[in-house]
Length: 291
Ligand SMILES: [Zn+2]
Image: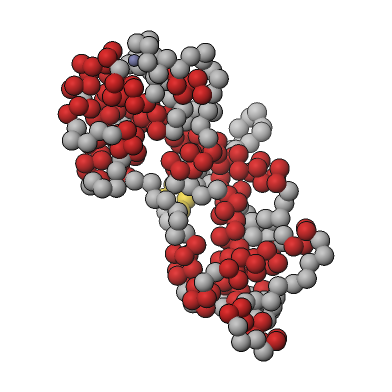
């Protein structure tokens, strides 16, 4: 793809790779292109002001909105929960720990390895639990205190000793990623439209009156039938959709609201997939959110 500001399109000779002509295209999908830019060398600039951190974070949040099709009303924590993504600031602190692990175990260039301060027992002859802590530096300014070495050493000393002393990066990554949620594969069940409407219910940002009312967009949270129009009311109770419900949701073996919206760990992926399909069929057939 040629990118140019010139009005007359510049002519370039054809490009061959391994004797194959590279096709010229008008558009191209850049997968996984954006985040590396937001994180370039992020171990060294994590001490930037909070307003700049927020600015960066908002780019990833916007991407999460595009992926889930959640509306502006959806909270950041719900978006991260639904995509299984980790915030950029959390990713930066993980990158710093991984970098320091390389330095500590002499797996980094010497100019980095030589920056690692001694451990307390090497300096003071300590024989306590903290003896294996890396000695932190004296910081006179907050700016320096938040810079790479002082901040990462504080985090490092909090890690369990067996993780610190294990030279395997695999063990370290397993430890620091231990709470990262994996998004179930059945979240991708169904057609895009069904997925979007289903996700919006799960994320409390659907067009149901209760969700709109919570964000001050409508004056009442009531359904046209007079009850509060919550996800539970819509999926399980509202009389307006009784017939569609008997052919869809009521046929399911389990239909509590958390399972209908997010699935359940107690049943198989196939069973969850089936529940998702049925719920989406209900949502589409009721036409509650448009034709
Ligand atoms: Zn109703």
